[in-house]
Each structure stands twice: as C-alpha cells, then as structure tokens.
Image 1: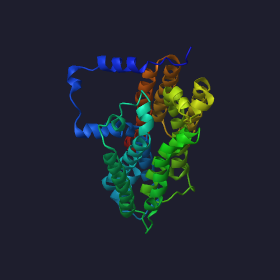
Image 2: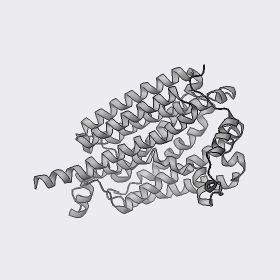
Image 3: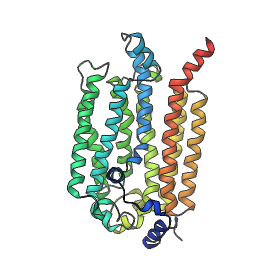
Image 4: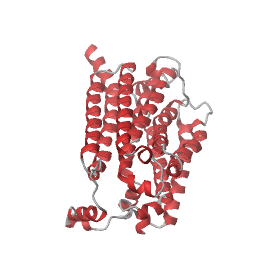
Length: 356
C-alpha cells in the first residue's frame, strides 16, 4: 500500500473541473497569467524572513550609526529602515524570485510536459512562448542587479561600498543553479534551502552594509546567520514532502532527490528530523534575542503547523500535500515575520509607555 494515496491524472483533472464554478471559467488576465507563471503567491515563503531580517537589521543599525540625526535614530531603533530602502529590498526580492522561477520553468519545460502533474503549466501548454519567458527572466535578473546598486547608494552606512551589487551575481548563481540540480545531485533540497536562505542575509546587508559578528546577539550578524540556517532546514523539510508527489516520475526519468534515493518513508522521517532541529534553533533564536510573549505565542502556532503538515503528508492524499505545502508554510513564514515585528517594533514602545 502506498505511503500517500495518489489520484490518477484523469481523476485529478476531473476533480479540478468539478470544483470550478461558472464564474471561474473566464480566461485569466495577462497579469494573472504571468503571476501564475512565476507563482508570485509563493513569494510568501522567503519574503517574510527577509522582512523580519530587515526589521532586526534596522535595530542593529541604530546601535552602529550614532552620528545619525534623532528622527532617523528613532526610526531605526524601532525597526524601520525608511520607505526608500524598504521598497528597494521588496523590489530586489520580487525580481530575484521572478528571475529564478522563470528560469526554472524554462529549463524544466520538457520534464513538465511529460509529468501529468505539471503538463498544464504555461510553457508545455503553449499559453506562454519560450521567447517571452526568456525575456522575463533576463529583464527581471537585470532589474535585480540594478536594484542592488540602488540599495548600496541609499544605505546610510554606504561608505563607498557596493557590497550588495558585488554579491548579486553570487545570488543569481544560487537561485538559478538550483533548477539544474535535480539532474546530478540527490541534495537538490539543500541547494533550494540555501537559495532562499540568502534572503535574510541579503536584507541584513541591504540595511547594514556588512556582517559584523561582534557585540551582543541582538546587534550581531549572528542574527541573519542563524535565520539563514533556520530557513535552510525549513526548506529542506517541506521540499522533501513536496517532492513525494513526483517520486515515481523522477525515478522513472532518472531525476535526483532525497525522495528518489531514500524512498518516501525514510524521506519523510528525514524531513521530520530537520524540522525538529529547525524548531530547536527557533527556540535558541528567541532566547538569544530576549524576545517575550509574542514570540513564544508564535512558536506555538509554528509548531502546530509543522505537526499538521507532517500528519497530512503521512495520512492524506497528494492533493492534501499540495494544500499543506502552500497554506501551512505560508502561515509559518507570516507568523514568524509578525512575531519579530511585534517584538522589535511594538513591545519596546509598549514597555516604554507603561514605564512612562
């Protein structure tokens, strides 16, 4: 008996068709089509960790830039880097991810056409041309590089350093290279984790311009380092669960993954283990940052989401796995961002008000 019940391609298509209401049969707009092509909604995975790192980096910058005028110092202390820098960080995240997703769809288009689960994606289905996909990939990559230069120019601690611009090719190497790793390594999930873990480190560099590991933890570059490790473990775990959907297909077409190498049962056990380690690191992170009640309430929610995700992966069908992949992991990343923002931006002001 299979570990996860899998619907046949015909049954899956019939189930999707029966779930569509007449109002949903209208053709998607051009914007909706391109947003779906790059799965813009999946930006919710890495972006909240980057924004959490931005808030923490702004607080650290407050301690490192004593020469700033009082309004700027207060804003940084409260975790706000300013609208201009915040907008550029947001733009860098979106353009980098758009470039990576477009490249992924391009290089995987032949496998997508053969896989019943992905045969209706835009390139195999012919709803988007290959030349248009390449244009989007190149333009978004160029916009990302240009945005990193703009970030270096507006950062308070610039001091003539173009650190974000110089590291932008390395970032592109990781986020684009991931799409090719299933062809030669079982540890493709690790590469994906590293690619997304760049986001909190990049956000920290965007605000502070360097990685200084000295001083107290709350002002140290140990913060983005530990966040990056947490993201890597989180991604490894849920990408293993997601890859179980393609176990038979990947094995038949000699594509690599931990699931193909170890089998679904052992792979799920490995995913559970790395998520346990991730939770331990989140506890350590909260203790070192001296966070209070909001963080620990968020930890309860994150733990429950991970537990539910693993229960679904073991007990339900692959359609449920897809729901778990997006919905639960979106909650995890958004809750983490929310509890960091509350701890850095709101709790200190509340304490100051109570003391006043």
